[in-house]
Length: 113
Length: 110
Image (cartoon, rainbow over all chains, first blue to last red):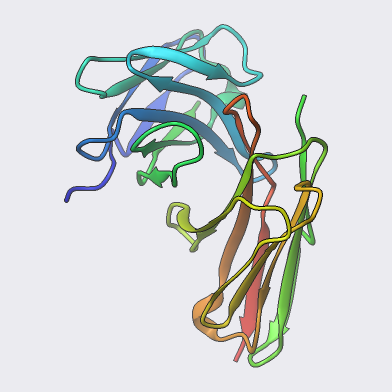
């Protein structure tokens, strides 16, 4: 069974640009969550999607958005990139909501110049 | 909003010594999960605790969930070099939102 796949693995952007990250969950998993990981801030919850609907949202500005497709694949978009957006973005999928174990992808390392 | 505090931030031990990391939530949790992230890797699920006062063991690892379902601990007996990494707790509320602690990074000196 394939794991969670995130693309691209690495990305370099400049301030003001926008970026879209992709996440393919484990087959059969319907819940997808996104996290931002930085050395100083740990793992910060961005949002959770289930059945194409955003179920929970973290404390991030509106520049961060996401969506989920009917096949459970998810994308995350960040507009007007800032230097502080440099981080590892992790996607995690679970079979269902309600406290199921989360399976993480390898992440997308985003660097803003 | 919900906060999950995890201590210590770093722990350096000699191989064979014990290790404990603690999590404390500002709100009552429906469950708590523990993850391990090796250097350069992604978090990997270890265990989930649901019941008040629950204790679970995995070989040398012992996980506890407090009676009030607001705190938890992970204890490793006789650490080995393979135990190195960052251990995270993640508390989930009834609203379904997961909040991760900042993690405890364990280094083990052979």
